[in-house]
Amino acid sequence: MVSVVGMRMRAALAAVALLGTGCSAAGAERPFTPADGAPSAVATAADPSGDATPGPLGAPQVMSTPGVENIEVAPGMTVSIEWPSGLDGAQQAMVKAFTDGYVGSWKAVVSQGKDTAYLSGVEDQAGRDAYTWVRGFVERRESATGSAKVYAVRVAAASGRGAEVDACVDESGVRVTEAGSGRPITGQPAWTRQPTAVYLQVAAVRKGDDGAWRVKTYLHASYPHERAKECRR
Image (cartoon, rainbow, N blue to C red; front, top):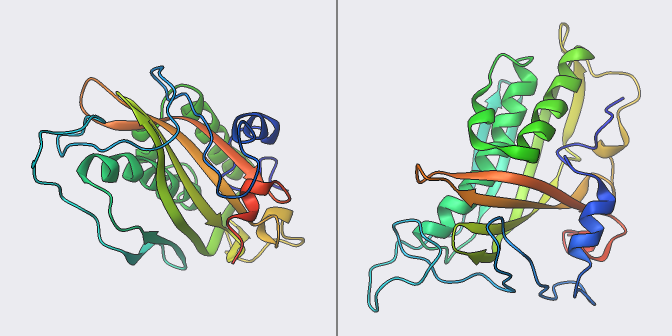
């Protein structure tokens, strides 16, 4: 049985403490303190260079367009990402830090820890949590098959080099398997079943001195928390 719930790599109580602040109804904005300090309630405009500050008036923005990307993690395992529209260049980099980490962690799971590329996109607590999550699968000799979905992605807050990325995740299409045979394990874990399989994932990301955005902290809200209900379809 998986000891940590899916990709929910931080304690739920910690997530509730953060997500519940100023949130009286689903979809309400709430204050958030990004990794480098100043609080902000909504995402700021960002310039294509990657700094989360407004660019010069009239500066060209590379805006994202909506679309679904199906990424093959391994034969039989995919991650479906619904890309939002209207993200500028810097916001796309913030979001990609989260999505790359999510996909990379599944690649680490199905490779039984041999693929370690995901560790380059996480640091601090997020790095420790991601490693522990992958290591759990490896030690139990478990892998995964099926499909996970990431949707309703947005930059909820940004200030300087810090930002918050929110995304809904649906892991009801994932099945845990035996690493050797590929057979589904007996008694699939609760996180593969509704309503637990659908949750809100929050990633606190920070831009490093090398210009790359990395995840510093993972938080999540699970059903029946109000923020998790936003993700139900």
